[in-house]
Length: 267
Ligand SMILES: C[C@](O)(CO)[C@H](O)COP(=O)(O)OP(=O)(O)OC[C@H]1O[C@@H](n2ccc(N)nc2=O)[C@H](O)[C@@H]1O
Ligand SMILES: Nc1ncnc2c1ncn2[C@@H]1O[C@H](COP(=O)(O)OP(=O)(O)OP(=O)(O)O)[C@@H](O)[C@H]1O
Image 1 (cartoon, rainbow, N blue to C red):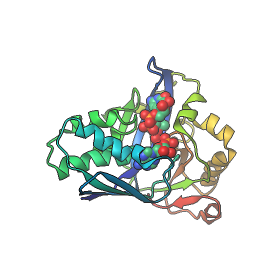
Image 2: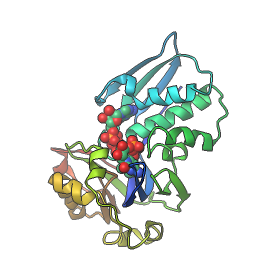
Image 3: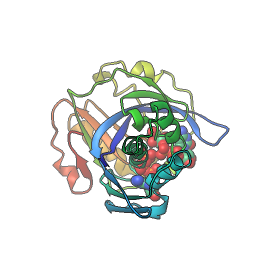
Image 4: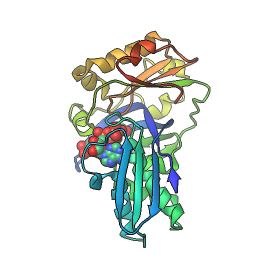
């Protein structure tokens, strides 16, 4: 069976407090976007993982797909698998690519081997693999809170807009990004702000990682500025960066960014 895990963007991200477990409480809106990996599993004599496309740093044995397989296998009878991941979602981008792979792999196992897992059971597995991971089980726009793994549905449909995503040649580690932020309660809840028209988001909806991450990597701030100059109604870094997205009324011309960055149109 083959599945196509997609990326997410964060529309707003308030980091509100440091938790006793070392993680941070936050509020954000996750929105799925159309940049996809391809992930395939075939029953095989022994467990094997391979990948192609963008190089994934680290040992394949630590890939989140393998971790998802091992976690589900603790409770269910699963055969050995030959797993292949074609990586297209940029890494160190704040797009949740690794989390998406893990969540889609849980869904693949459920379907391919008839495990009969509920959405909640799959989300509980996903929560153990990464804070972002549970979102990708249902994969619908949500207001997320606590570690980013508790959800409330939001009515948010950006399909009449063009979303463009730019990945500058910078890799931001999520853990480093968190260590650069001083948590603070937000003046206005994102749950309310997200209901405003997109044209009013610019001065109201913020990403708390931006200040420190763009301080360290000015190119990210320059890309965001370019998106506004090209006519974006709203532009922001996604998650802990380094990717930046813009919400446009019509397809912009961003050729000048393509020399340095990867540009994904209409995601
Ligand atoms: C930046 C975001 O993408 C925003 O959506 C997520 O919060 C990151 O989610 P993720 O990559 O699934 O994160 P994990 O793999 O669980 O954690 C990576 C590291 O980020 C930090 N982390 C993550 C989530 C969170 N709510 N608080 C944290 O402090 C921790 O230092 C952790 O060791
Ligand atoms: N399937 C996978 N895809 C990508 N990275 C993976 C995968 N499995 C494990 N990893 C590891 O995760 C690291 C990337 O995580 P990191 O949090 O920096 O970036 P990210 O994918 O943009 O995620 P996020 O949006 O949550 O910040 C990689 O360096 C790699 O070692």
